[in-house]
Length: 76
Image (cartoon, rainbow, N blue to C red; front, side, top):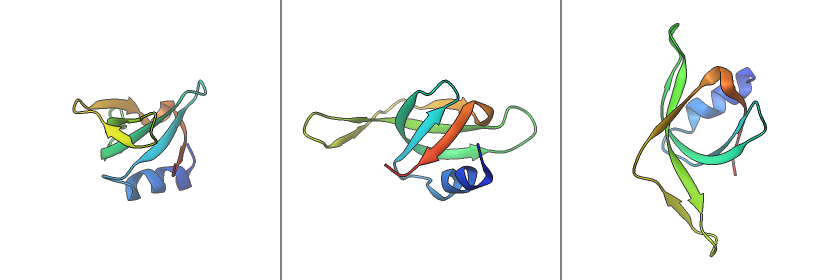
């Protein structure tokens, strides 16, 4: 992940972003907290699903992913 992508992730707390992992998987998420400490830096987020009618549905259960596993962050 580039410094620009990390900056976008940090600036997008409580907003919907698209995260792309190193294996090419893309998904929508609402970041809640970015941890940039030395031990396992990661982002905690709520997954977001785009419904058939185009609306977005945010999950109630959070997930996390290591920052080193993220290739890119984009606005959807």
